[in-house]
Image 1 (cartoon, rainbow, N blue to C red):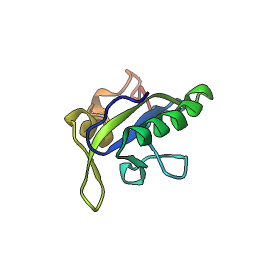
Image 2: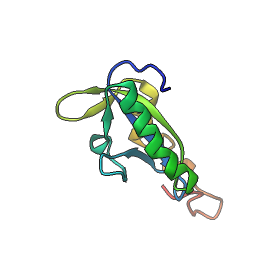
Image 3: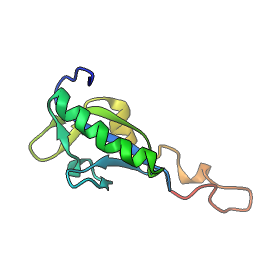
Length: 109
């Protein structure tokens, strides 16, 4: 049985290949844009999103999929929680602090 949800939800995860934040789209693919996400408004809809994501976890495509609450503004989705708004905005570390002593990037950004 799916957990109780309040309001619209979308499913997010991180790609295992590069750590990119992605959202499960209605076409069954992972999308970089939250506006391309499939939205659930009911517990059954949320359970269906989680079941679709489980396949991608088993095949080592994504890690840690979970539902997030969103506001549907009519022109797109906005995460309710600050943590999720920050997550989709990208890394909060300045590139200056992401270098090794040789001047190369420590990780690809």
